[in-house]
Image 1 (cartoon, rainbow, N blue to C red):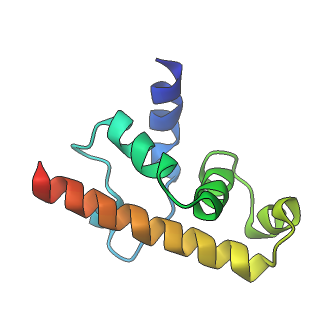
Image 2: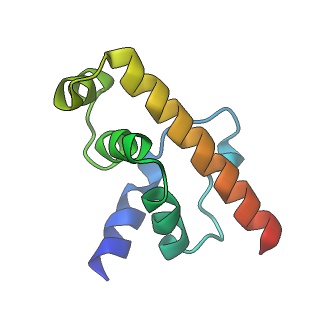
Length: 94
């Protein structure tokens, strides 16, 4: 379906984390990753989606959401960390 294809097209744009393996999508079905993103807290998810899927800068995200630029940056960092943790947990259990 088109949502899965859109996600796969953007997968290589996932933000860097300290350990590249943590954010690797290899072996994780797109539907599972999409659900992980959907289950992020709303602020994290919004910032993550604007950054990854819409290509917005931290400044643009901050302006769009009416928050400080460093808040946008920290929410993105927390979203990445949460996703990395969920990806690790998924791999351990599958």
